[in-house]
Each structure stands twice: as structure tokens, then as C-alpha cells.
Figure (tube, rainbow, N blue to C red):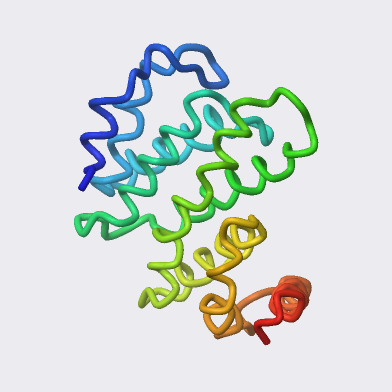
Length: 186
């Protein structure tokens, strides 16, 4: 099993870029996602949001960073920050899907193709004890489940998406109900 540390150590970060240039700084900036220290965690989330998905743009370093986030989400040492990381994965998936209509967006294409590999870490949080984490997982799952490769997961996900639907806004509830109905999973 690949650990978060393995991903940081084996990725050629210096060959990748983020919004502000070389991604060689990312291993140190992303490490705090695993240790959960409040100030350091906030700085790491700032890095994800501003360096790797700045204004919805995806970069060559976004996919390896997403793989790191997925590994942190599934690591038993991770105790805090899951909702924020799930929301970031949702943003990555949403941006990747949105850029599908454009040609020659290799970074978005790579992220879009990887969405099915992100999904198990998202689904693993459907029953998290914290309702904020559960909602973040369900939002991310809804975005990801639109990918054709995840069609076989829709029926199993539907009860989770509909569970505690009152925790969502009225418009989100409508989107969830429409999606589940469209998938024939209602």
C-alpha cells in the first residue's frame, strides 16, 4: 500500500508546476495535511486551493497532490481536516469535468481520468461520525459519479447521497434527487 510519505518522496515534484511555478516546494507544504496541526493544516489547504486549483485551473502538480490527499484521507493517522480535503477533491473533479469540452488541457484530462481512483476514499467517508465530513463526502461523490467509469457505483451510492438530505441546501437537495432519479437508483 502506498503511504502519503511514499507519494511525497517518489513524485518528481521539480518536474511539475503549480500556479506559481515549480512544484518542488509542495512536499513540505503538503506534509501538514497528515499531521493535522491547525496552523500548518490551514497553510497546506491554502496551498491546495491557491497553488493547485487557482481559479479552477488545474496544473501538472494537481494530480499528484490529489493522490496525496486521497492517501491522507485513507490513512488511519488522519484524524482531522477530512471535510476540507474532500471539498478540495470535489473542486478538482468539478474543474476537470468542466474542462472536458476543451481540447488540449492535459492537466485537466489527467485529473478527469483519475476521478475513479479518488472515489473510494470519498465513499469511505459516507458514514463518518462527523456530519460535516459526511456532507463533504456526499457532495464530492455526487460530482464524481457523473463520470461514466463510476456508473456501476451509482446504485450503491444513492442511499448515502439521499441520507440526511436535510443537511444540504434546498437547491443541493434537488440536484441530488434529480441525479438519483436520472440514474434509476431511486
